[in-house]
Image 1 (tube, one colour):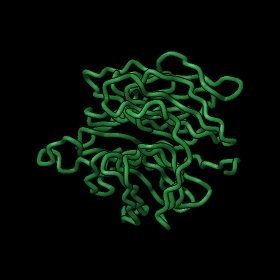
Image 2 (image 1 turned 45 degrees about the horizontal axis):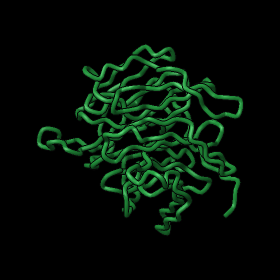
Image 3 (image 1 turned 60 degrees about the vertical axis):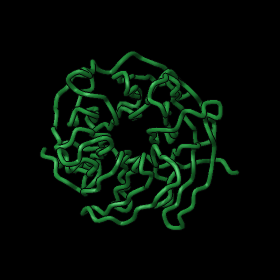
Image 4 (image 1 turned 135 degrees about the vertical axis):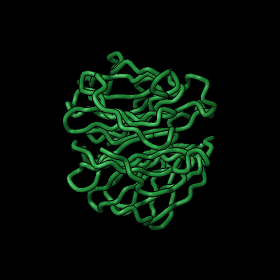
Length: 291
């Protein structure tokens, strides 16, 4: 499993890769040079939509090329075709120093996302679950940077990362499909591994975690034991996603923010790894409420 350059993008903070199996398109965002990128399966750039404010994530909707997105000021409906941004809600009007960070559509169709303190110092970040009928639940708090929400394929567990303190939190589902804390998933060694960032799971229950300032992506078995580690030629690896034919291709976003690009000329690129594992298709947001 050898990483290769998919696109030498030079993103400031490449994040949130999402594979749309319906159109064989890879999407990702640049959080701090705000934009949405679209790539063909062969690495060609199909589109780049600049944004007026920082972005944490995009998630697929029933219309290809249209997304629900977490931006600096809240959740928005976004369309690449007409460049529209339609405001939906601000989950944290009481926390102007926060912004939305990573998010994903869960196995049951809910949108799960978290926030961070924009100064990266205060534990004001929270995690949220927005159901398809429009109910917003704040189910956890105390994060400096909430990252990597992802469901385990066992259907019972869910993961969030508190990146700045190096904790990969494990949750269990309640009867109403909301979450409760269930300890930590693995023993993360920040001194050796850097900061835990984005997460994806494979169909066998493996949990893949990107290493910011660790220069690799690691797979952990379902019980939290580190089983694989793949080095990349850049230090700030942000998030993996599966896609491609048979969902066996792993895409990895990276960042060149505060990096000496002479020493790391490929920082900020998107990388690709052909794996022996099979990923899960990206969830699709299908809201059941009307304005």
